[in-house]
Length: 231
Image (cartoon, rainbow, N blue to C red; front, side, top):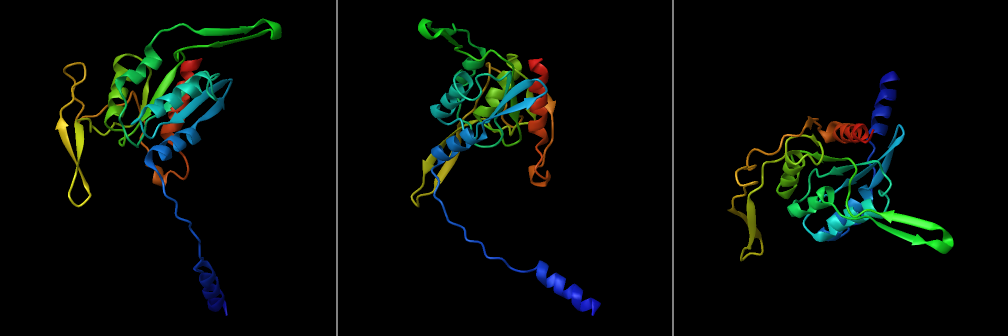
């Protein structure tokens, strides 16, 4: 009787369920931008507010524009520090995107006397910023990580980047497939070659996300670093 009971429980555990999945077609540019917008959040720790955004792609001006809009006018405009997550995804960024973190420019103050309103908007980000990378951060994202370290923009947290920086070009094949071939080497500051070497973060944190049970130790360390920098 006891063995039958165990068999019955085992049958219940192995019961097959049917799930209905509706397929959805994604367009790459929209998909990456939607994911970037959805990732944006403000994390309150102690008496500070830390902004966070994950840029899955930098291959287009719209991604940097979204970043700047959120930091200057949107949900992140009042945070005390910012975490820029460049793990995974696509590269494509021009090094000039860093001007937003390093440049200088006047703030703009709008005054409405009748309503006694006064609002000031900066033109650049002048608060602490932390970059987050991993072994899937490649191409232009690695160049940005290198610049963060070399020009003291902010600390880099995570794991060593891919070391895949050489410039490539896609070629369309007769069967409709594409062949992506490296066509030019890339040197930074005239002598520094990241290909095959990557960028080692200032604060190394290993993370195997499929086995992390929902935790993200790299992100947690980046937030901690941003918190310390804001105090």
